Amino acid sequence: MPSRLITRRNALLTGASAVAAPFVVTTPSFGQTGPIKIAGLVSLTGSGSPFGPNNRIAHQAVVDQVNAAGGLLGRKVEYLSEDDQTNAEAGVRGARKLIDVDKVSALMSVWASAVGTAVLPLCWENKVMMLAISAADTIAELPHQGYFVRTQPHTVLQAKQFAKFILAQNAKSAYLIMPQTPFTESVLKTIREDVEPKGVKVGTAVIDNKKTSFRSEIDEMVRANPDIFMMGGYVGENIVMAKDLFRAGYKGKVMGFAYGIVPAFIDGAGKEAAEGIYSIADPSPAFDSSAYTKLKALVKKDQLDTFMCQAYDHANLAILSMAKGKDATGTTIRDNIRKISGNNESGVVVDNALDGLKLIAEGKEIKYSGASGPCKFADNGNIIEVAFRTAQVKDGKLVQVQM
Image (cartoon, rainbow, N blue to C red; front, side):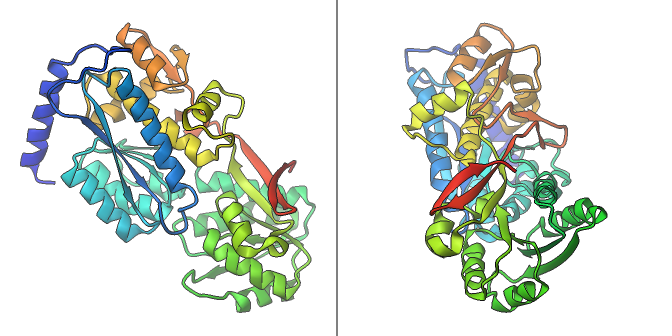
């Protein structure tokens, strides 16, 4: 982004904060300096499409709620979104539009790791905050200058859940197949390191996710006859592998990442092929939290997946950070997000933007605790304190089970 445009934008925002009215709950009355813009870079098509539409609904619901109560810093909040198509090239195009043209302060709920890896440099170069789901460990290692937090547990933590499951089943052998992703190497390495010292023999294969059949890889796995097979793809690859697996007559236990074992997978693979497969490393929403209850009422849904909960938290965190810093820039979000979230042990606990805005306007400290969990972040942006759950396909439905 040209430096001239940054200077003009900052000047506009500085002017806005100088005349900002205090937060008003019941009287929508917006200033004349234009809306504060935040955006979702969501997966409406591709492998992430089972989740992106719900994420967008959660973002918009929070923004509508805040605008109905008077807005933020005396201004209307405008929500925009782009479809990243669950691929890096489309994600960069969408991010460039949102950053360069729309001038947003935050990109929220970036789902795929490949997209997050490609887009994060655009964020820190343009001082735009990324509140992400993308789980690849390598993303937090980028020089993001603090313009990054994520609510999804990173992939090493997820890999450790697979290792824990393998050991809990008393397996003597395991076979792991994954497509090439930014986190494939770290996941396979972590599982090996955790289970091989306990006597588990591990075989691995990395597949080309552009293939229409993985029969040769599945046949090789079946010949190895492992006790447990990890089908480590997204929904599309898992559907293909499950059908090949069913035809091959494999009788061992099968497990996959929670994001790849979802109702869309069961529908695509078919009830018989999907039956008995385990869903591992699913970060559990905070089912017992008041935030989860409020989100259900807000979006009028009885069941919420973890990604919709995280999207709700992203929107609340971005808005409350800007209120805390009394400015509407990505830098303000970066500098204040740990002052209003689970990191702030001395704050009054809040579970939604409206309550938080009222307390901030009264000069009080707050501690946002969300629908996905406490929302506490390490210095590198990783989430701290995550609860996992395990599920299994039974009679065509995902049922929570004990590991």
